[in-house]
Image (cartoon, rainbow, N blue to C red; front, side):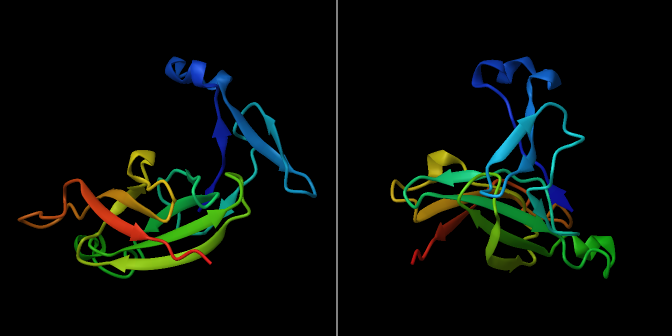
Amino acid sequence: DNMILGRVARSKIGNLDGKDWEFVQRLDGKYNPTWGPRHEPAIYILRAPGRCGEAGVQYLPGVDVYVLPQWHYPTLNDTPQVEGWDHTRFELYQAPHPWGPWTLFHSQDFQPQGYYNPAIPSKFVSPDGKSFWIVVAGNFNGDPRPYYTINLIPVKLEVS
């Protein structure tokens, strides 16, 4: 339903020690973050009840914007689970900083592919930031399972 934001020094990423992490705990009037230890007091940088899945933020330097690809199963509670897994909705958010403020700029449904866990690897972002690939897995139900593999979705941004 919501996202928090944490950070860790590059030199400590491999340690996998929770005490090395900091989380956004407040935003001042100019939207500057205050970082602190422990995730419990962290504030939500995005609230989207029923519409948050596993996701990560990607910076697009060519257009100087952060993009957060979110996803969810919009019909999972309305249909039998076998059918509900084949319909996903991607919602792409943009922000000037990784802590927001986040604005929805694109929404798209995928059915029967049921794509999930979208990621934007920096390796697949063009230098101008206007095109990139989203890497996803797909619908894991049914036989055969043509979408249950690594899938690449090309994206071209219209920047105004």
